[in-house]
Amino acid sequence: MTASDKREQKIRQNPKNVSLEDFEWLVNKYGTIKMGGSHAKAQIGQYSLPYPRTNPIRTCYVKDLINKIDSLK
Image 1 (cartoon, rainbow, N blue to C red):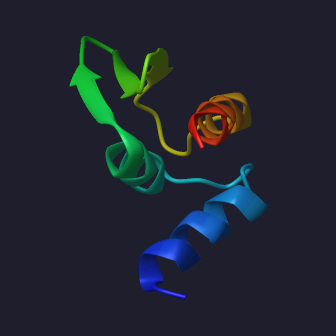
Image 2: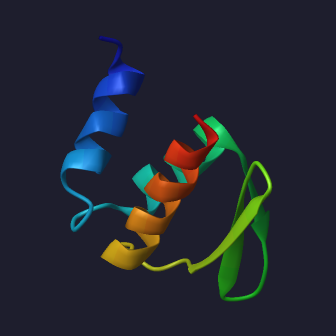
Image 3: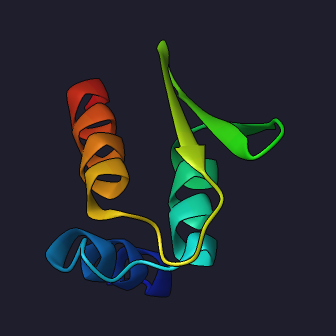
């Protein structure tokens, strides 16, 4: 298992404690980030997920991102 896989597994196992850096790393792994004012948009395939750039990221945004990634697989 690579370091990248371990980092993703850590995020999936504990979505309640995800830093902004880890969240955006996961977005960049599967898609792109479009910056805006106080919110940014995660573009994963055909899905667009706006999220606030706060640290730590709220659990609902992490779970939405994981669901979007899983739906692409």
